[in-house]
Image (cartoon, rainbow over all chains, first blue to last red; front, side, top):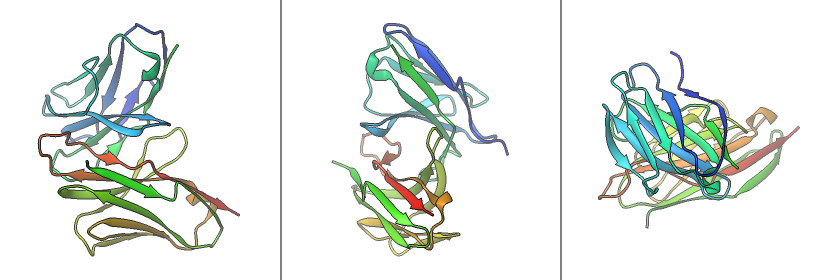
Length: 113
Length: 113
């Protein structure tokens, strides 16, 4: 099976702009979760989508949003970018059952200047 | 507050020198505890899932164990290719809070030849 794919792999944006990141989960997986990884805070949960519905959300401002399509692919959007949004954004897919392992993609490295 | 703490933050070993990494957690209800390995610039790679105290899982030179308050990742006779950051994460029963994985900050492991 192909793994989780994320596009683009690298992105440079200017403060105030918005950005959309894309994630394709493992075939058959219905849950997609998004995480932000920074050197200071480590890996932090953003939100989870399951069957096109946001099932859970972490403690991030409303500038961070997402959606999931009928084929389980997911997108994450960040509006009004701030310097502190520079991070590795990771997508993880799973079957969606509670407590099962999640499989991560390679991430999108976002740099905000 | 639910928390995951990993120790040590960094560990340098000689090739063949066995050791253990620790992950202690304080959560109200544990659905599962996960170990991941992360190489620089890559997404976390799934290693193990543990669900209940007393459970053990093994894979090559790695063995993960779980008690009611902590988990250990034992590395036996490590090789240089085992060098990576090892991350511990818990999935807890949600009580209205975020229901994603909560990660520790990781242990940066270096195996010297």
